[in-house]
Image 1 (cartoon, helix red, strand yellow):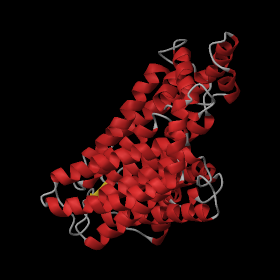
Image 2 (spheres, helix red, strand yellow):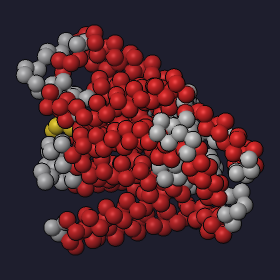
Image 3 (tube, rainbow, N blue to C red):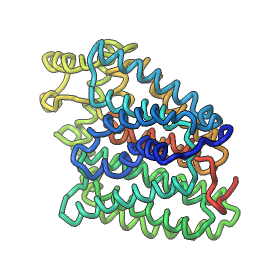
Image 4 (cartoon, rainbow, N blue to C red):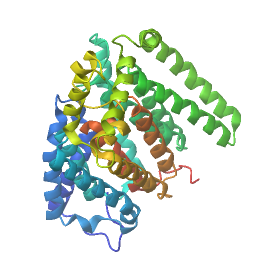
Length: 407
């Protein structure tokens, strides 16, 4: 990563060390963080270190003003969301873990936005990250873990696997170098297999819908229909049997839960959570209630409006991202959050130097969006970092891979 704004500043050995420290949280969030129990707790400290290194190195010299302009709306939206989240946190309390994750991400993205990134370096980062997650997943699977989850919960881990898989797959479709394309495709397939090992139905269903939609779009847009159809068929031959083999029990359980919603099933409990969430929203629809939802849920239980099983659950969140944010941050918060996601996506759309950026960004937003219908990927710092850093990098790429498509 370097600058093309005016003359490139010289890199001394000391400057190179400081630049390396500035990029350290980036590599950590994509690699080592997933291997360490509670590894996410070290990210804020690394971000502070990166910020100090950035200032000491006068890192703004290495920024590309064109790229920085591309990220302008994204950065404004992020800090506006951050400011509102902090107001809610200090006014009505909220999850400190979530707020800390967003704050670290906002600071770090403000540091690296504008740094040039070659497609080759992006490929290396994604490949190293994917290899690490695949290895960790296979290790847990061979140890007999019924639902692999890394060192976090299965839903969060599944969102990370699925998100990285769709991004790598989208980038692979734009690569004309067959070795690069094949290598990325294999990594995407292995990540998909690891996703199915989590047994997470919401993420897996969203992933499958995205794959089907992307396959149809790929065939329609392809100038050579037969090779595209052969590729889609080969993908189906690998993914469908693998997914069924790893998810058969979970699919059967889903049918059983649908038939028995009144009992203590996962789906039935979610439906009751959502109903309770709408009752809580009515208390303060504009600005939300923060962590005041605990007391409101207790009151709903005393009035007999929610079941004992839900009350015992001690709702930390409502298993739906937009519903959860509406409860805690109100309609203002949800509006700011949607604006943040759209601004991040806009950064990839503006990056005409790397055509795969928009498709990868859309796939990542779709994966997290679908996952958000039954889970809260933006409640966990691990997936917050992975999502927003990936979107930033997709907007930062300024050099095409040799031989890659230009349109």
